[in-house]
Image 1 (cartoon, rainbow, N blue to C red):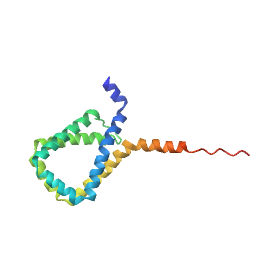
Image 2 (cartoon, one colour; image 1 turned 180 degrees about the horizontal axis):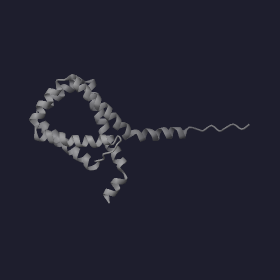
Image 3 (cartoon, helix red, strand yellow; image 1 turned 120 degrees about the horizontal axis):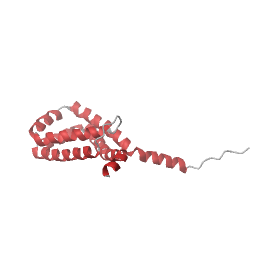
Image 4 (cartoon, rainbow, N blue to C red; image 1 turned 60 degrees about the vertical axis):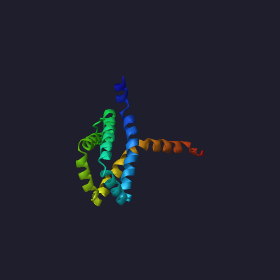
Length: 159
């Protein structure tokens, strides 16, 4: 019965996950672009602690498994972004748990590349923006329709 209910409402699940992921991705991307030096320093501090890498791996794996279990939709629309990020989170989480030393080395090299951080930030801004638009778009549509319907209608003049 739960399966049937989920199948009838995949867009609701997609929009809920988009409302959670979109703003986080958007904020992360903006931070990476606007405060590039600060974000690179935060990344270096994070990468200096293998315990944090391991903990992040567990949380990332958990988030990825939750997304894939609720939303494993391979569609030809915006919802596939959620599914792809779910699977990437699973792979990234496993990588952090199983190989924290390699994550540390790889990440340290990546934080030195300013352009790579900005490109990654811009990608997160775009993808986060798409998810925010689709996750919260119906709120704007409802408001637009509510404002339009609350305006008094002009009656046609009789001659």
